[in-house]
Image 1 (tube, rainbow, N blue to C red):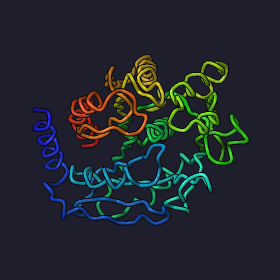
Image 2: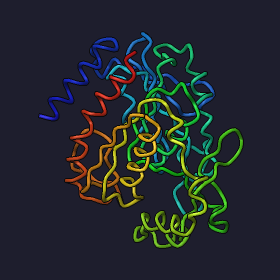
Image 3: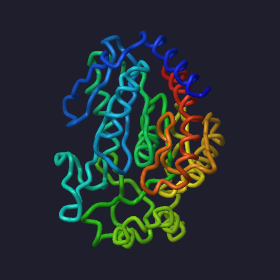
Image 4: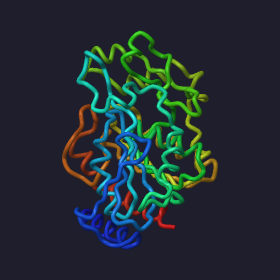
Length: 320
């Protein structure tokens, strides 16, 4: 039943934004000034922009997976790779050596530059602008939303309510000193981890959720500065989180975000699935990313429930 509803909503979205499409109809265009970024569209009629913001894995997997899907739903879908992990001799070579290899001071304000680069490109209507992010991509999206009034719609999977410490090869000797994100050339205040380097050494045995939770316990004095001011974002917001997320406590963060915005008189939808983990993007399938938490079955059920709501939310918030 849910799969039928998803198909119906996708069809409605396609009709609203310019007609049904087939896989062969998706056009991919590079975006000047943004290496490896791609604009996915069906035809050249202006459509709402949706920027796909990747998680900690970086590179372009999320873009290549969801760009065509969102394009067929009637959006100008933009894959924006902004980080390509580079651990030197301790990991595989980076896929995109010309992108930042460490998750340090990632420029949130590149979203404004991207919007200007998209202005006038075939198929893109930058006056209707949404963000679609998961995990670190959700962190990116919420920070951007709190700073730019022209962002109309945000879908944030596995969100956080604070900016976190950055990471990279150079951080092994400098724990707790660098932010994940920057704005206007300045690093944003952040919440440090506890035991990040130990976690690197532990590999798959590392408790990522504890590394985040213990960092917050150690630094209550930094909470206010690190908090993302989500009440400054006046657009529409949909949060999706799992109660058994093994990477960070996305469910508590989603609740905190919703409460902050409710107190400011802003509507926010939070879909929290108590038995699900971190891997909730998409429309179903029993699969599991490494260290997601929850179970493949719980994650699949959450995806199947959430995806039709994501589709409907985007159609409602970006239609006009």
